[in-house]
Image (cartoon, rainbow, N blue to C red; front, side, top):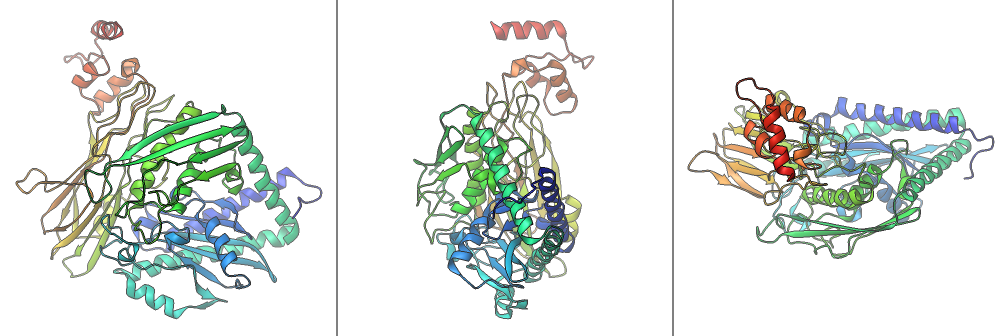
Length: 579
């Protein structure tokens, strides 16, 4: 469809703003009707619109790790099912080998018709509490094939011409350990897509089908032009970076390296992962759909906020990922714990892009979105599964410190309040939740300090803990002379003779057992001794940095008697460091 006659860029912007407001309404529909805290509190889901051919028109401010997923899902559906898309249909999939991410992530896409013509798609989906498999929560680290990880749904019709697929609903109900919650959340996504359809048809009614489609094409082309202009402003060249996972999820001695080369040439970029280690015999593999999500999120992070969040920004990018590597595994490789690898991938992307646009990039965040699932039974005999991610904070930035207690830039999630989890899961008690002093990556602009949490399991039967951690052997890197943050630690029953310092694990929990996790501190930016002494003093007063660390690392002396800066001693320490 050509751009409309009498084109108005104001009208195009108003259409984009309308779509944004409609997607916000879709996301609110999910939050208000879902049952799972990981959906309504953490926002581990995404809603949006795609064009009739699948290209992303707009993605909401949900979890970025779901970005660009729907574009591939819809393109594949149209290719594999020609002539089988009708008004009232609702498609569903969670299949990593159909370009989804991992089995707990369920994706819904609903076609929008104006008369007999397919004009767009409303999409929504995200992480489910449990879809079966060998561990509660469906995120084992030690699976050896995808068939152990839960129910796998290739793209299917959940509704056909408005009629529910009762067989598929029966299968979903039987496969999950928490079917009421899973079916409620899937229903929330379907409802959001219906809201999205209604709002999009209002646009069609206002502008007409052909004129609207022309404006949407113009919006995608406009985004592409902005993206290419951003890339053209970057220095041409080939940039390299690599980072390493602690282990492969099975053998603690087998680290896994991700290697990246980014080529900037004129107004186009290529992301090439040649040399990345091969797929592993565990569920730390990251399928190509999830790899693509991490890359497109990284691409957008180098561009200004005026570049719309649609598929036009992806057009100048070429992605090369060797088939059979950990970022593009072959079926039936397991992928349930791909989130840990996806975060290390994001760290690699950040480190490489920081060489291209250092003024916009930050030091390494606290790392892996540490995921835990605790399953058990409460005093009422009700089975439950607590699913939670432990967040840390951002790395230091060229103009400011990293943000304490914040999800990594690649995620955009939220925190589940203690009060919510203790209400929903009465057999779980939080005994500790706070910052840990002296854990930040020191720098002129420091990284976030570590956060520690402690859970007490008070179930009436033995429970199960499934844990995915990383950054235990290396702290998140600093840049421009900044120091790395402290590594992560995870301990079951800390301070007892039964203490178990653990990594990726599935293990039993006895009533009264405790789990303590201290996430990694984030990397620092710039030399620590260049940090503003007043900022160091503020950190000391807030108990984020000890006076001893202020002196030895930042070269700032704090007077014990007055609690203020000893200016003369600080000058002496910094002069000595400079020598």
